[in-house]
Length: 610
Image 1 (tube, rainbow, N blue to C red):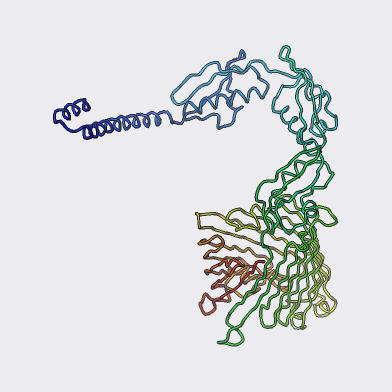
Image 2 (image 1 turned 180 degrees about the vertical axis):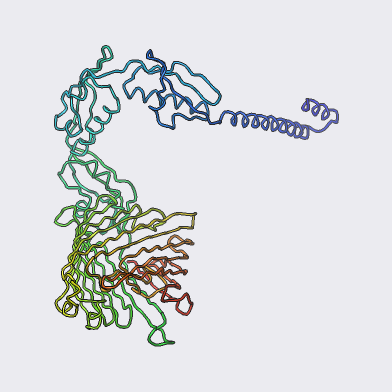
């Protein structure tokens, strides 16, 4: 009506053609917009009416009478919101019945009762196996897959069980050099609800490894990388090993997989093609700390630290690490580590380490570590032996039993799992690990001479050490990341624990706001919470809060001492193209240190990558 009136008025006023077209277009547009709004309102109303939650109840309508069969189905099939989800739920329920052997299951009737939809299902007869003959499938292969002929005589015909056997046979074949193997029914017959069948197996050609091709120019030996990936030339193809290639390369700090590995087959041989990128993983790190000198008021004490890490030595994945620290005027720390992967061309990796700690003029600890581990994807399981020797410089501490001379040998297991790349910014993902060790401690004769024998102190005792860590990186936004790490440890010895036994905490890498190795602990829990704001690809500002629980228990003393030190502060990590510049400012609080800017710590460090 409005369109007709508008047309007549425009004609009577003798408007030009363009103007009349414009007003006609505007009128039609307003009319169409009104219709669209009306349709959208009707659709929204109908959608809200349909998208109401209601329950589905399944009952059996077979001759034995109606029975509730809803318990046979998962909970997600008993709730629907619209007609589409209802049809999908009913279809899934029928498929589950067929998988259980009711091949003729069908819907008999559907009835509504308020918010309840009752579905009457006729299951029909249960189909059973008459027999399932192994046919030409090798008996060894079927035995590994868990197949037994007696399980398929007068037993329900369950499709899931057959699928499981078929998948297992194919998986075993793929991991044994037959990636093109197939299995099926040679003949399948049904008579009076009895199923009989014969298996047919085609192994396909046996496939062996031909070569590993690195399509990019990287300083890595292809022979070593093949051994690391457990790809042995002329060895039978293994699909499981091929599937783990990406995770194994991702675990290397100096390589990044640009594309998924591609496999080409030719002349019964498999060739693995890799597109990898070499990443600068070697680093040199120096840190300088300025803090008040407790021995000379008003003067600053400068502490120093040097760390160098070399990766992929001799182009064969070997590593070397050295760290030196001057913690206090008379304290020193030296840490050496060597990594040797694929020991004797096996999947076993060897790590050797040496640690020396001189604590003022009190004692010196020497530790030697022998670690052998096996890497599987992102997980690493290892066995280690640690030999510790501790000696004192004076007899005063020996007399009061707080420190003594001893030798200690640990034997233990460790486990680590990481689900993020080590050669990228850890902006998401998590890691966890732990170790458990048992050792024998032997007190030295010169230490026993100062101990009262009436205490019945055992010179040879058993000591346990437990450690665990967990960390995660959670993305809060495009540029904001929350990182959190928790570590803990506990020492157990019912006979003798001394200060030179203890865990050491404090400093830039553990509890910021305190001197390096400031705290002794027989058991502890430490939480490092950090909020990072990225303003560039690898540069960020951060705020941090470190909270710990520290307990010190010396077995020669009654009771124990506990403390809850914490540190807060801020810093910046700046990527310069050649390395990372790290500046951190922190203040800490404990029972022996007040929260004061006068005792704040300023840390400076630069990690050069090459």
